[in-house]
Length: 490
Image 1 (cartoon, helix red, strand yellow):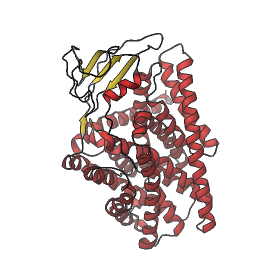
Image 2 (cartoon, one colour):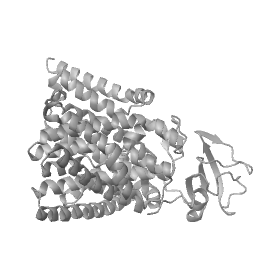
Image 3 (cartoon, helix red, strand yellow):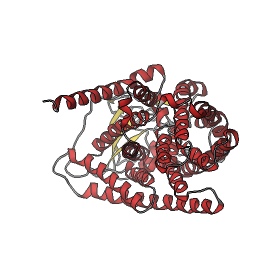
Image 4 (spheres, one colour):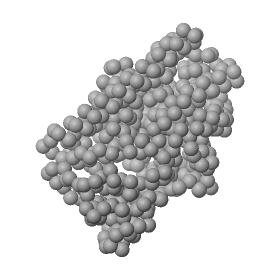
C-alpha cells in the first residue's frame, strides 16, 4: 500500500489541477483574462513556491508540448476547412509567411541594436517571438466568436505562422552561425520544410479521408481514435521526410474539415476536447520550466517588457501592417487584426529549442520569451473584448447546445446537405417559398439558436440559421446560403 498511496495522491493532485483549469474558463470570461494566461502564470508561481514541481526536464517538456501542439493544429485546420480557407487563401498564406518573417527580422534587429544581444541569439529570439496565437483571443472572448473574414484570417494566420516559425527556427539552429553562407542554408532549409510539409499534409489528409470513408470499424469509439493516430502518423511522416510536421497536420486538418465521413460530428467533438486539453497541458508544462526568481537577472525582465511593448505598438502595427496593406479589410478590421497578434505556447516551445541547442545566452533568451508571452496574453488579451466592442467587429454568440438530436444511417445518405445561412446571402431574410433552390429541393429542418423552427412555406430564414436540405444539386445550393462577395483578396 505504500506504493499505491503516493500514486493516489499524485492522481488526486493532477485531477484537481485539471478541474481548476477547466473551471478557469468561467473566471477568465468574467475577468477578461485568457485561460492560457492563468495556466502559464499559475504554473510558474507554483513552481517557484514548490521547486519540486519544476523538476521535469526540458526534453520531456518539449516532447509533451510538441504532441499537444500537433493536436491543436490539427483541430484548428479542421475548424477552418477547405471552404473557409478558399475564401482567403492568398491573404492567409501571405500574412502567415510574410508577417512571420518581417516580425522575426524586425525583432532581431531591435534585440541586437537596442539591447546588445549577439546577432545569432537575436535572430533566434526574433524567430521565437514571431508566431501569433489568436486561440488566446478566442479564449478570452468566451462564447463570442468573430464572424466573417476577420475570424477566418486570424485563425488562418495562427495556423500558418506556427509551422513557419518552427521551420525557420529549425533552419537557423541547423545553420549554426550568422553569415551570408548560413543565410543561404536557412533559406533552402526553410523552403524545403514548407514544401515537403504541405505536400505530406495534402497527401496524408486525402489518404486519411479515404481510410475514414472506406474502412469500417467494429465500435463507434474507435473512429475518433483512428483519426487522432492518423494525424500523428502524418506529423511523423512529415518530420521524417525533413519537412514541417506541424504544417503537415495543419494542412491535413484543412483537407478533412468540410468533408463528410462516418461519425464526423463525434470526431470533431473529440478533437475539440483534446485540443482544449492540449492547450491546458502545454501552458502548464511550459510554465513549470520558468524560474520566476531568475527573471530580473541579466535584465531579462525589463528587456522582455520593452520587447513586448515594441511588438504590440511598433513592430506588428508598422511592419505587419505594411504586409497587410494588399489585403482588403475595413479599417476597424485591420486595426483589430494588428492588435490581436498575441503570443502563446509556440514562442515558449521555440525557446526550449534554443535551450536544447546549447546556444550561448539561451537561459536569458528563454526568460525574455516568457515575459513577452505573459505580457501579451494578460495585457493585450485582456483588452480584446473592449476593443472588439469599440471597433464594431462583428461577433456571434455561440450558446452551448448540451442536447442533441441525430439520425444515423448505415450508408452515407445521398442528397442530404447541411448549410448555415450567412449574413447577406440570398437566403438571409427569404421565406422557404422564396428560396432559389429549385423545385427538387426540400428544406426539412431549420435550427435557430439551438431550437427547431417549424418549417412552413412562410418561414423566414435568418442569418446564423442551420438548414438541412434534401436535394441533388449541392453546388447550386451552396450559393444560396453563402455570401458571394465575402471573399478577401490579396
